[in-house]
Length: 392
Image (cartoon, rainbow, N blue to C red):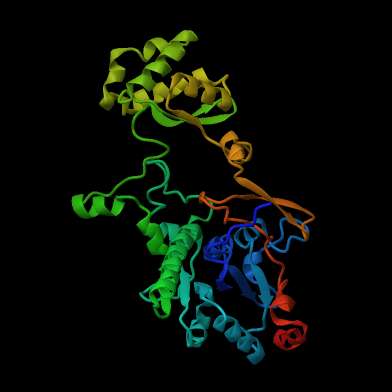
């Protein structure tokens, strides 16, 4: 049996003072071998939420964001607890702090040593919003992505899935990795990294800011597709599919029209008529509505799987809109062994996790342990004799 490959961050200890906004940043390092020690109060951090499963020790979001981490419980209001935190920081190569824990930043920075300190907050360390609390909805809205999401005729739309935290954590992890590289390779000194989730969201708007800067025009949200009648999300028998078959992609368009004609559907004849070759007409409400009615009546008795299989066979640019249950059974993800089952002793069952969002040449990504219970590794990290004094 081959020995496991050395992992990129096997020698790295990270002190984790994160919450939901920033917890994914340290999870990324933990998956690559770093010892990530989550420091929390004796009663646990609020981001554990209400347990979705009996005995889980936190909600489902907590279980995902904090897998592979350790937990130590400290009374940071006590002198003994703060002294232990200082010792932990002194032993670490990096500290990652959530903006809601910013009061600890002076203490963290007072500990000598060349390490990376990364603070992730909604709005950054300075400026008129510094110190303000935020939320996923607030930060998405102030970052501009909410304006760009949703249908043109409807109010702006928040993107699901806590994207402010995930986007900010990805940028923060990248910056932290670069700073660690500088210390290790170039002998650089200590780094303080200030990550604003609002700025990270604004950075993810593709070219929207440049359109305003260069053209003086405000980009508008485009809904589920483009203005073209044939590039939208459409209903089928058991869900929805996304179709992208305009006449600018003639092979896909012809294959769709031929398929309709083969089945004797009226769309086969109607879509072959001349007015469908005019892109400006296809963007009108009348033709958009007509195409939707034609396509959805054609797809009404066809499942997403059938639509996908026909699209692949006929070379039509179309894909099913996957629900969460669809993702869990997706043949591509299953083939690549994307999902990983991790036993959780407290929950009494295995939890299924999304796997690595990348593939490396060596098998260095692993999920070895479930998210910790409060203070689960306190004795391991400090020894039994120290526990009473630091608990307060």
